[in-house]
Amino acid sequence: MPLRARRRRRYALIAFAALILIVVAVYGVSFISYLPRYTIQSISIEGAREVPEELIRRYTETILNDGSYTILSRENIFLYSRTEIEKGLESFLPRIESAHVVAQSVLSTDLHIVVEEREPYALWCLVEGGACYLMDKNGFIFSAMASSSPGERTTQYIFGGSILSSTDSTGSQQVNPIGQKFIPAHLPGLLSLLEILGQSGFEPKGAVVDNDQDFFVSLRKGFTLKASFGQDTNTLTKNLELVLSSDALRGKEKSIEYIDLRFGNRVYYKLKGEAEVSNTRP
Image (cartoon, rainbow, N blue to C red; front, side, top):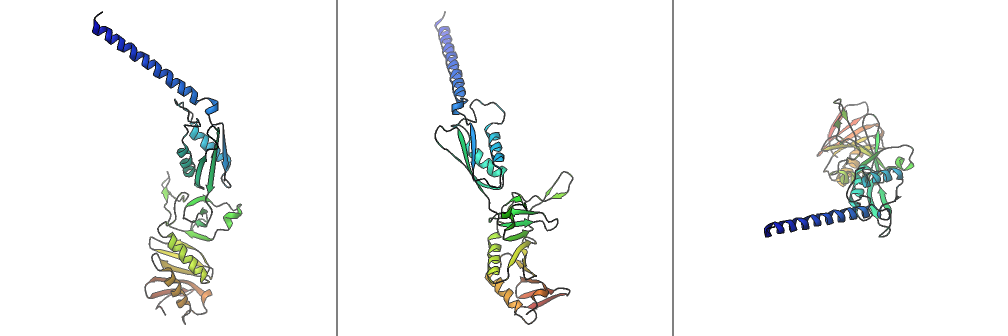
């Protein structure tokens, strides 16, 4: 046999032997990754109150095992995707604000998940239809309101408007606020105004956003304050006090339908059953 042919044959045998070794090594690693001692056997949940633990557990199981075979086990205690589980739970269950996979020990086969649920701070309600949803302090709407939960009835404010609608298969406009944020750019300023109004004795019940610029605050005194985003909250409250102390409105709070402070030094107000009145601020 010529020398060149012998070399080619030797290289081929070496390559074949290397391929066999690689296949055996991969099979061995794959086999070890599926051993029960290195496989997650249980999932424990901590911190869940409103979200059922079983729902969290089953969703996690679908991430660990989606029914397909992989060379390396997705349920292996060293190989599972911690980030995928954490981010997946936060996305799939909007009520969960954060989820963390905590390692109990290096060789533990229990997957321990610590979740933190969003706290209801206010309600966002449909202007028509009456359906209401829970909202946290950052304006994130995360769940439909369930009247059976005591914590859901003690929210401080009720908001409405400024939520995007979607079109279903029939062409109808549907509003699904879950997962959306209520006026994220303006919410801090609006909450500041409501707090100042409360400290001044006006007891705001909440607000409805009319458009990108205007909003209406409902007060327990029985009338509505119309204002615009960007107005100074302290000045707005002071102006409201001045208007109510004017000769035209002093002592008539129960008869007022609304006071409109959106137009500079010009104030508009309406008494129930009467026409709108325009005047300069006192």
